[in-house]
Image (cartoon, rainbow, N blue to C red):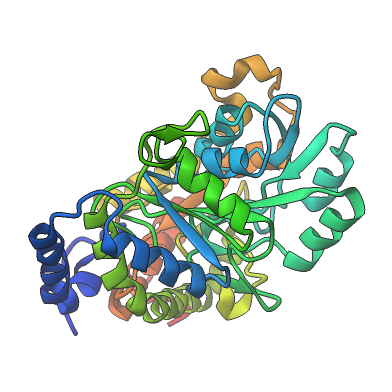
Length: 394
């Protein structure tokens, strides 16, 4: 399906995904309304099974959001007070909040500046006798190396709990995101590769006892009605949202493939701009990278700084984002953890450099060219090289 090319290149646009399946989405929602099973209903059970299977695991337990998936999943894995959990400093704060809500002690480490993924060498150096678990964050849609994670897990008896909130159906080294460790948490925030029409999340695992525990924890700690064996909470994925997600799930491989197409076009067109200090984050997953975001580094070599570049792009009708501008250890809410500026230099440097370009299924080649041409125009104008006549890499 083709759509008119807008004067604006939005950061995210759902039309290409939703318009062809609009009727199915409406029918799915109406079916829930007619059944009236709004909480823990039929579509939730079916979606949980389907998503777990698609992720290479045995069980899925839908929860209210991705943060709850991390917190309740860790708790179900037995992680709590006195346990240290290693995680990267450059992640969304939900990863850190999940560890704290589970009652454990977060231990932050730096990242690989070329991929922005957790630096596993730094993670290994951070292991102590109190370390019980590691949370590899499959950031921007790219997985952390499964073979390296499993080697660390075996060597140090570490539990691996994946934060796969941005990596729905990502693959690397024969593993799917969510299938490497003991369990994993996903988010279904609307802008995710598989997004609901509101908040939502899921824990996936192949261990039955963990699945049973999360089911109890999400429902007031009840293994059956009015019989509470755990100190739980109310965190259930609504049946209406599950119906939406179940309708969209069969289309996700196609949508992910189109994201990869967009990324390949960006890679090709941006290559000549390396001499001006623009570098896309490296892809070590090949076609297994599902590109929730397409992120470039605007380094000190660039004639125009990131803020000026972002502002200039906005004035030219191109929306961008920064994911994320402040690393976890420098967020005011987490000063009590005792980290300071300079503790994680790569994460701190990336936060000053990264810029997320428009990325979504259906982004047209003409729009991709416009984005890159606009970047080139701003760089060359700032460097006093004149106004380019065409994209050099076209």
